[in-house]
Picture 1 (cartoon, rainbow, N blue to C red):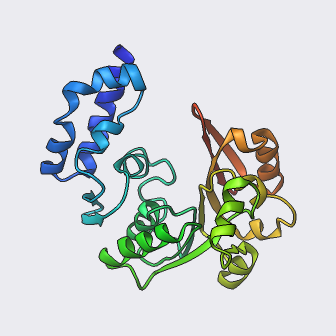
Picture 2 (picture 1 turned 180 degrees about the vertical axis):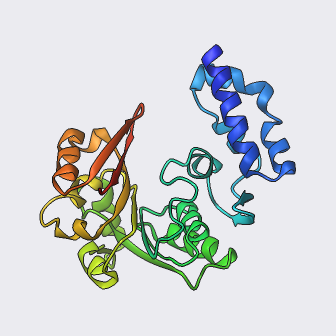
Amino acid sequence: MLSDLNRLLKELFFVSKILPFSLFIRWISGANRCLDLLSKNRTLGALDQVFGESFDVLWSGKKLHFVQLDFGVVREIYGHLCYAAKGQLTEARHIFDLGANGGAFTVFALAEAPYAQVYAVEAQSELVEIVKHNVKQNGYEDRGIIQCAIVGGFYDDWTKSLLKSNPQIQEFDIREYIARVGICDFLKCDVEGGEFKLFQGDLTWTQSVKSMALEFHPTKGNVNELEKTLKSQGFRVKRADHSHLGYFYCTRD
């Protein structure tokens, strides 16, 4: 119970930093239920749903607007800084968001990197429209390039069913895009298992990537082999394991 309370206090601190005060009060309005939920389900999902899927976030002196997003994702990206630290992307010119979902990290990167083009790739067409909307309503449409494509190829039942329902969908050709931009300052990758296919074959394109945050899914492939592959490409790799997923943070000397 003490660890659950510590976790809740930690989350309250994070959320207090990124939500306008009125929304923060709404979020914690369900806190009297939270300890029971933490003990039973180990999740804050019920609190995340308190104001639905549309909300504002305070970030770097701006008020960012989001629609059709899970606030739990926003807590991870803006509160826990699970992909990039505050200030890390300031000087970046080219950022890739592979597996953009609803655009939470896409907007994070655009807000953090005022000179960057951000290339967002998402496989589900309905989410692509949400990314476009969230990018546009925050005034970043001139620097956000959003594409509907599969990252890692059609490697499992889900991606194969996606191809069946959307025959026009293509595999994202990262080599072509890297060649076009020259240098990728930061690559974020969260593609639900596609990471194992992405980092196979000709990996010369990785030499143009300065740093990466890669979410891995142990049930989808060999994480140790993936780590070896990343190191073989000259990255210094820090690994952070969690219960059902983890992260590789990759930088170059």
